[in-house]
Length: 118
Image (tube, rainbow, N blue to C red; front, top):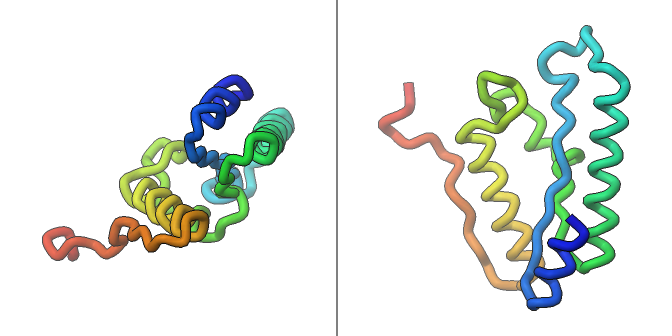
């Protein structure tokens, strides 16, 4: 990741990184994950934030965004995001780019299309 961020920022790219979501408490709060999982998640997120700071990348801190915590954004495997989850990511990226650039960038609508409403 270090080399990737270095190369991209050297080219003048605006880089956006994202921390990982700790979804361990969303599905089976009474069944704790092995401690190594939490340690690795914290370590990975710390590294992402550190490298983002080092290279001037924009870091979306998804581990602390409440809108990235509901169960409804995860797929059936309870690990990966579903379509709604990816729409929320896209909306956060658009919001972040608007703050960064000062130019209004609209994200996808999170409204449920009429044909998919119950």
